[in-house]
Image (cartoon, rainbow, N blue to C red):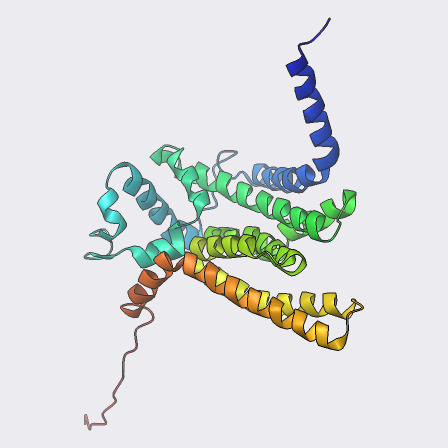
Length: 292
């Protein structure tokens, strides 16, 4: 039996892809499988009557996710202001912290009475993607190969922080973007191209600024660690090393500002929104008086 040329080419492409990318596929599917088995054993919905919706996830976030879906399908005007917030209030700050993750689009696929199922699927997806993104960093920047890549990717995806904070589902985005941002820094240092770094940084800031600011603090140390490591191993003269370091530092500084600037359309309104709420300063005065 003969096959059309198109079918043969497709089969060859799939076989070649699996041959070259199987470690990355395992870095995604093994955490996905492990987490799914745990949820099945624990009877997490839809595998039983239990649910991930506990503590803040059940008391706060699930209502925000319902509001997210309602905003898209029923009331787009409530994106900026909603009377469902206490007696009415600005919603930009709430969106920036809880709801701007691009992965939240999954809530638009599920019916509104299946939010619990959407949360289960989203949690599995995010944790699986953390393994994939870390595997990508190892492969592209540190020559990670085979089972070593798979092992470290699984360790990253299923580390204690991930398991503990799966109930703070919006924080998981930072674990996905951190390896991608680190890869952007590697490209910046090796090729003097920082656009990829800026885009991934902007995406992290957009998804959840709270975790992203911690990522930014880590990136400063990571950048200088990698920069000093690269220049120390080179055979350049001391003066050339200084010039190379300064140019790389300026490039890092500029593209960091660019990343922040790309997300400023959300960060600035959020900043001013916080000034009217949690970040506001209230001067307290105390007076002594005799009551008896």
